[in-house]
Length: 102
Image (cartoon, rainbow, N blue to C red; front, side):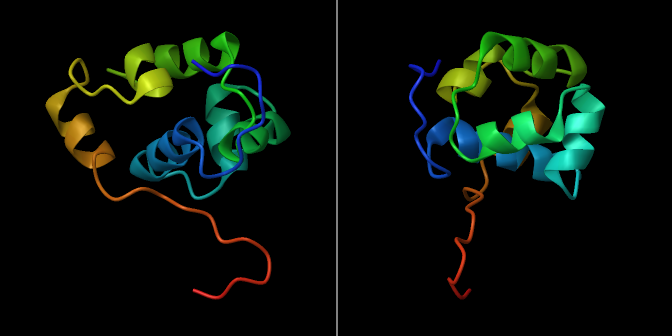
């Protein structure tokens, strides 16, 4: 669980959330936010390092079959369904900062 500090887009919870969005095949944070029934700006903030609060974590765990709070907060895959764990254990999903080239 996050300690309340904004940690930036490379924060582990932010990387996990972006990875989950990609695995679930949501192209944008706005589309994923709609699925979760939260505001796009709130999800975008968490994907960019704002703390992952209980309310959003619980919403994700409720809406995504097999999702655990252990994975969302700590990255533990032990209790995830095998196929979901395999997909989520791929390479980390990073963000490009303005002006960076790929």
